[in-house]
Image 1 (cartoon, rainbow, N blue to C red):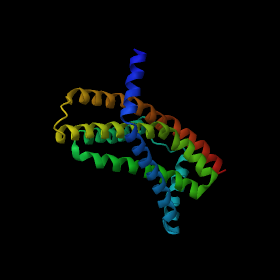
Image 2: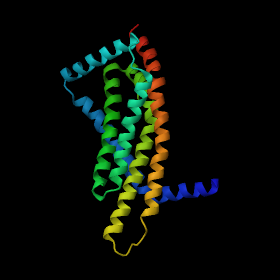
Image 3: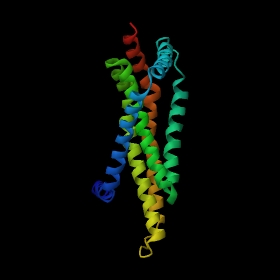
Image 4: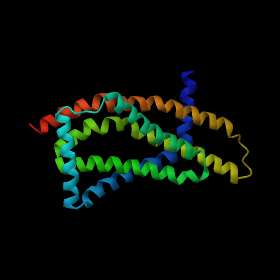
Length: 213
């Protein structure tokens, strides 16, 4: 069973290696673009953002966190909606470019968030992003790249099925495999949301208290 699973995984990566490379590069371009946006902001824009960030930090120091269960639900549903959207887009031929845009925007958000914290707070900003942004993204970023890749792969398979008449490969088995994979991904999303809701706030409070001592 283990050998068979390894064979399936190896085959998957061999068949989709070029898509993985493309989606990874696209995400990294998004990260760089997000960092560039930070540097292109005017002083007043940075000052306004930092003002709201300081207010948020003040609430953290005072222990004014949202309910962890509510945070978990909101976080989980947010990621499920994104992944569900990719799943739906993968089922349509015209959804392929939108999947690429979503991956790029995910990179922009990560790059902007980390870039802004480091730009405004230096070492403390890096430390804050390390405990509040990076840990769940160590799970979510590879997950989004994986979801984007299998969605693109399924969409390309449908395109070949529709427009290349010589190919007569039944699409239904791939659809079931595609859907089951997406369902399994939700378990991993649950782990990321759990960290974000139950662990990250406490670590953020510890770092913010160090900053504002």
